Amino acid sequence: MIDLYTAATPNGHKVSIALEEMGLAYDVHPIDLSSGQQKEPEFLTLNPNGRIPAIVDRDEDDLVIFESGAILIYLAEKTGMLMPSDVRGRMEVLQWLMFQMGGIGPMQGQAHVFFRYFPEKIQPVIERYQNETKRLYTVLNTQLTNKNYLAGAGRGDYSIADIANWTWVRSYDWAGVTIDDLPHLTAWIERIAARPAAEKGVNIPPSVGGKKTAEAGKKIIVT
Image (tube, rainbow, N blue to C red; front, top):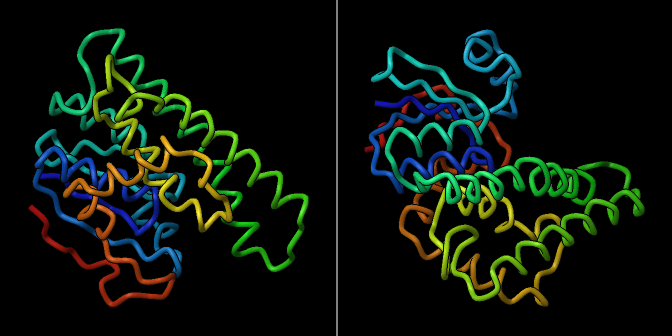
């Protein structure tokens, strides 16, 4: 059994989708970001950086793992799913996973902040992050030419790299970025959205629109 400490964010959804794809049993512990629950001492024992998600694998002597990318790698290695075992295939998946961790996430995250939330609309800053996000989308679009998924030979194999990138890219509109001119990326977004595990995973835990929720801190059983 795995305990998942998470919230309704792209990084949180990475792990819930992966767990659903892998068919692992897990308990969800929603973390109320709006109240700062992620900064409280109890959560900081799991992640000293005070960020979601984090997991505790009860079957591995209560092994604690934080950082969404590290969690995805751990789960893939634990189950032998969503990442090839050969060196070439494994490195290809990890490269595209790191592409999201070091590029898509930080750039699109800043686009979200300055386009949607920052009280002062500083247009050069907004455009800087939107343009870099769009450039990264273009890289993905090129990689997806004649491929269903980001990594793997032939038409590609679905992997944790797709999960990580998709949870962010699917919210392109929230960042104020258009993808009308990126047909391969658009088809990839739709292809993954049709997967039952992705459809379920993006609703774990349910989004509360930034408001406090009565479920915060409670445990929801998911199998």
